[in-house]
Image 1 (cartoon, rainbow, N blue to C red):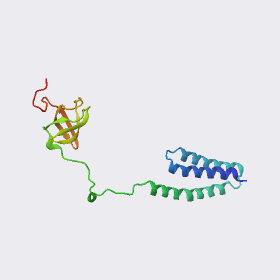
Image 2: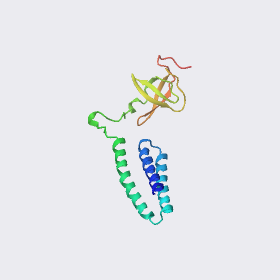
Image 3: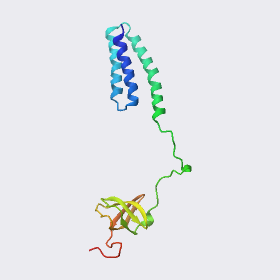
Image 4: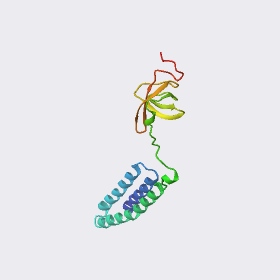
Length: 162
């Protein structure tokens, strides 16, 4: 009558298998707790056979868990690669030539948004101030792909901001 040893062990393996499909750790921990409970029950109910039960459960768990881990890694891992020859490149552009140029805020900059300089849309940030949509901006600083702008004193039509 090893039912008090086998049932928690099988339930623990089933919970560990469910953890592969519903990640989060709770089911895996519950499965491990069931397996430990099974071992504890073996030592309590059948102390003369407990070491054999422990050894058998360790072997059975290893035989069960290793294929489950391999399956999970194969099924849920990214297999596709992005090669430059296929057209995948980083989006880094050299924006240093934009320093000092004027543009228009396409969206409201709070403090990040989109500007248009020379007909090209660029993600930009301000030094903290808000710039309304349609206001003129001047590219003040460029750090890598980060474009920092300031609100310009003149609007795109040439009039002075008052």
